[in-house]
Amino acid sequence: MMPSLDDAPPPGKEFLDRLRAIVGPKGIVDSTSEAAKFERDERGLFNGKAAIILRPSSTEEVAAILKACNDAAVAVIPQGGNTGLVGGSTPTPAGNEIVLSLSRMNRIRGLDAANDTISVDAGCILAEIQKAAAAVDRQFALSLAAEGTCQIGGNLSTNAGGINVLRFGMAREQVLGLEVVLADGRILSTMNALRKDNTGYDLKQIFIGAEGTLGVITGAVLKLQPAPRETSTCLVAVSSPAAAIELLGRAKTGSGGNCVAFELTHRRLLDFVFAHIPETADPLGRPYEWYVLAEFAAGDMGGALMAMVEGLLERAFEDGLALDATIAASEAQRRALWRLRESMTEAQKPEGGSIKHDIAVPVSAVPEFLEKARVACEALVPGCRVCAFGHAGDGNIHFNVSQPVGADRAGFLARWHDMNHAVHEIVASMGGSISAEHGIGRLKRDELPFYKDAVAIDLMRAMKRAFDPNGILNPGRVIPDPAN
Ligand code: FAD
Ligand code: 2HG
Ligand code: ZN
Image: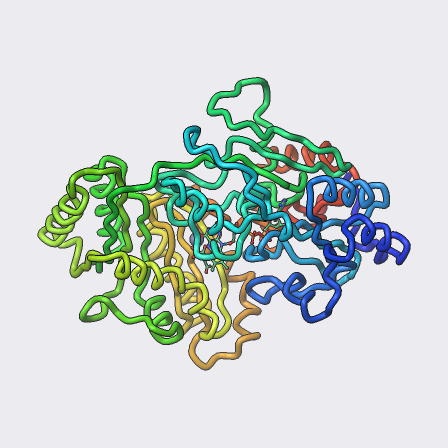
């Protein structure tokens, strides 16, 4: 059994002073007001208190901190941009956990355009990596609405998805090399920039998606892609989710794999955006129930990409799949379409309590899932407002449910577990996943044993014991309690 640090007392002053000495005055967050943003999660569901918040400036400092914490059996919570949505990156209220923020480790270590690679510190903000790639006519393919705040270390630790998974895969597929500090302070370096390296186990992949439970990622070598020469982005009102999936098939085939994003949304999310996000407006003349935001990108095709998209939409109108559409005619229009999509998380907040689901089913099963889950939630809480949107091209739907208008927020959120159960049972019956891209953290840890293979959980526990025998890294996150 793993040792549990849940009830450990807060570390004493002498120990904390040792940690202070490792990082120096610049590496400590001292003011209470500044600390709050490290102690509260993005959705305000998890509020905690850190024993100390450390901001090391080098891999060696991270190594020294972990060695000290491992020797003293003190818990460490690695933190990137703190945009995670499952409560994995903030401390509990017990005051016995160290928050280890990577935010000062934000150097681009090197860029090899001819090799299509960039080498970075884990604390680099995702948008900064995208910018560095663009400056040498390349693209870093990971893209998500939190990209101005989240860090690559957090992206890799959660194996983030986002809008371009359809074409380029999830975060783990963008990585060639990784640097990780292990729980005992040893530094594992697989920082190579090679496309081919079959020298035994692919160890870096073990840390990607581990949500900080197996090691602290301090650096990475990432793959770059050619920067696209032609891009075409369209917002399409579709006649139904089934029509959207038919359109997706045609888009993939018609574009020869150049459909890079295919997002589905219910009208309700757009209504929330228009109501709460400044300077947004409906690009279509009248409201429809379902929409697709699709993007196509390719090299120089002499303008043929736009012609392909126009042809695709023409046939979709003829066949009754599309009811209305607009194609961005400029970069400004393209940005405006994406702003609608990227604002959806923020726009749900003023609408009161929201019960979240981040699920995946086979792409072909998306329409059936949407209907079954809507019926189940509306039966459970009459008047609730289903907000279904997300990465339909990957079979990943954010099936969020807002409280009925005027309902009591706390009363509605008290149904969180019941609603999750109803939705997740439908997901399971379709061979789906209860966490498509956000991870497990604390939010879904207790549900995991019901939906993941028991042998897989045994192996996860065995790996945890092997990599972190004292259980100091993100205790109480991801790995279910043996009692469950
Ligand atoms: P954090 O939130 O700080 O941490 C996340 C987890 O990783 C925690 O368990 C933490 O302990 C661990 N961790 C962080 N850094 C390290 C490290 N260096 N080493 C080891 N462990 C570490 N997610 C998606 O997948 N797709 C989306 O489309 C998407 N869109 C989002 C949109 C918005 C508006 C918001 C707020 C969030 C969205 N997310 C999305 C969720 C979130 O942005 C991602 O999970 C992101 O990858 C987290 O990165 P972060 O740096 O903020 O990590
Ligand atoms: C997105 O795709 C994110 O925008 C956030 O994954 C989803 O708001 C959410 O639940
Ligand atoms: Zn998402």
